[in-house]
Every structure is written in structure tokens, then in C-alpha cells.
Length: 309
Image (cartoon, rainbow, N blue to C red):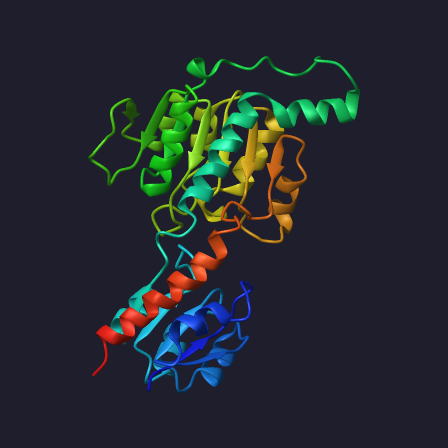
């Protein structure tokens, strides 16, 4: 009988996973977030469910029975995919997890800033009942939204803001099927130049890390609003802080940062008066976490069945 080890999770006690996997599989939940911890706790594992534990070359080489790894979530930042392929280990994320929640969060951030809700609330707290210093909102038809990354979440963001009357622009070098009403741009800089709100909806990869830099932020401009519900690594945070300080960027809504909880420049951004920071909550709803746990277990079970000798 195959053994599945839940290396680490802050999503619950493993009961959802066990209900789905037992008695076909032996399921053991531990709490390890280091290479040594995974090697010791999962020495007999055929499959792993992981959240933040590092699945590195060393870990993969040290787990001879391992055939499959599934991560709780969409990102695979903590798994060495090339090493997994070399060792014949199948890897999957839960790629249909929290799509609606993240799209709702990004669209809400865009609409809230379009109506100046955060700016007005802070102005009232600091200066009392006055409209002085609060820029007049554009009507949605004059307040274009840019969607960087036009996968399932990006498309869902586009559909939501289009329904509210915002013109939608997008950039994605891998997408060729463009919905009617969406204007595509050949570069991220040109997209930023064309819009007031720029929503980031892409994974952090070698190609996308640091993609939003001083040039992109300058193109977005002093009325621009950056929305990041994806990964902190997409943004050069020193450039973002400099743009906010200089007034060459208007506002940022950040659900993700390079360091969580924030330290260093990320902490300076979190405290900036023209930044609204959420503690990485775009994925949250009453349904998203139970579904994540269930889907992760189902995907791992399917992988182990397919790779059974």
C-alpha cells in the first residue's frame, strides 16, 4: 500500500485529505519545512502533499520511493521541477483553485480605487470632512484596465471589470485567442502606457521575476494604479517604492510581497500612504480552502494510481 505524507500545511488537520485517501492509501501528517525534516519524515513516502516545504534536488534524491508531489495551491516556487523530472517524480499544482476568489479580489481593488475609496477614507482620517486632496474619479468608460497575464484568472478579471464598464487591455505573449472587446498589446510597457489600472495575473518564473520595473511603472504614470494579487517577485519593489515616493506612480494595491510578513523594502511599501496592503488573502473564501485540500488529495491519488508499478 502506498504511503502519502502531508509535509506541512496551515490549512487544517489533514482530515479532509484522509477522508478522501484512506483506506486506499496510508496517510501521515507531519509538520516539516526544511530539507532535513522532509527527508526524515517522508523516507517511506510514495506521494507528498506540500505547502511550503522545499522539494529540492537533495530531497528528491533522498526519497527513493517517491513518485508524485502535489502542492496545495497554484504556484510551484518551492519545488525543483527540473530535478523532479530527472528523478521521474510527477509534480502537480491545484490549477483550478481560487480562480474566482482572486479575480474577485483584483476586480474589487480596481473598482475601489477607481472610486477613490481608500484614498478618501485615509483623507478623512487625517484631515476630516473635506474633499480637498481627493482626485476626482474617472467614469469607468474613461478608466482603462490593463490585465498582464491573460490566463484563466486574467480573463476572469477582464470579464468582471468589463461588466462594470471599464475598457479592457491585455498583454500575454503566449495567448492568441483574444475575446471580443479586449485590446492586446505587444509589450508590458505598452500595456501599462495604455491603462490606468494594471492587474498582474501570472506566475513567478525566471521570465517574469522583476518584470514590473521602473520602465513599466513610469509608463503606468502618476495616475496609475498597480494591482498585484499574483506573486511579490513580479515587481522590483525598490523601483515601486521609488515611483511612489517620486509621485510618478499614483497608487498600489498589493496582496503579495517579496517577504511575508513584510521586512525591508516590502515593509516600507506596506507602510506607504499610497499603498493598500492585504496579508495575502485574495484566495480566501468559505469554499476555497476545503476545495483546495480535497482537490490536492484527488490529484495526488490519480498520479499515484497512474504511476503504480
